[in-house]
Image 1 (cartoon, rainbow, N blue to C red):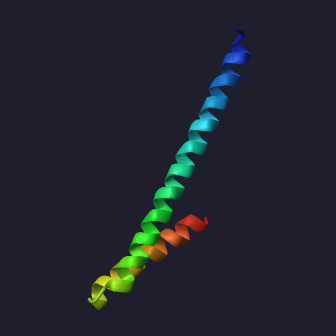
Image 2 (image 1 turned 90 degrees about the horizontal axis):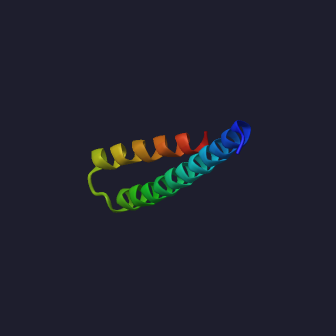
Length: 65
C-alpha cells in the first residue's frame, strides 16, 4: 500500500468518525430538547421554568447553526 493510499484511508476513516460523532450529538440534542420541553410543561415553579426555557432555547439556537 502506498503512502497516498494510506492517507486516503485515514482521511476516509476520519470523515466516518466525524459523521458518527455528529449524528450522536444530534440524537442527544434532540432527546434533551424533548426532555426539557416535557419539564417545562409540567413545571410549577416559574423561575425554574424560565431557566429550563433559557437552556432549551439556547440548544435550539445552537442546533440551527
